[in-house]
Image (cartoon, rainbow, N blue to C red; front, side, top):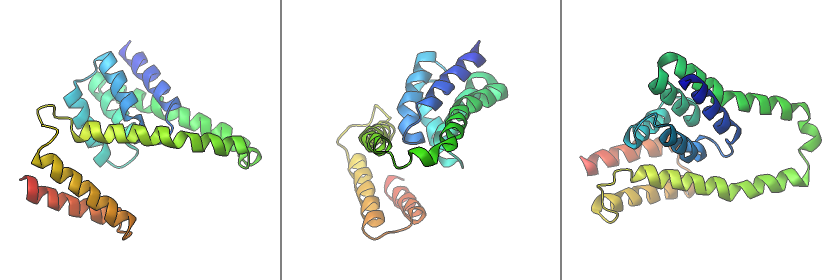
Length: 179
């Protein structure tokens, strides 16, 4: 029964995966809490682990949740569930892509999805950035976290730094400040 729930849950999530893995984190979290597959704290740790692992974060998160819920078979079933919709959609769209690519409806649909995806990503960033409920909203840790985030935005956007360089530098700054 758990395997079927994992497959159906991640199949639904896979069909709703607009905007990439980070935009799907709130949906995955809702399903995990509803099925009680893991605690909120363990989910946050799983998402962090999935983000550090190579590959798409939503797929990695599904694999970790499936493993936690039902071992290796749960991991495989969850991964198939979240990847299968993309495979089906890509096969269908690619069969008539050149006919619809210039369509105004396609362009306006994707333009309309931008604010939704942005909102979901911002929610995920805030929720996991401040997941410890014991942490006060206004503290020196929060201030430095926001300063680091602003600095990363500036150097990537204005000075065109490589994201990997900003990750390494941010990690070193975080170690220096928060240790």
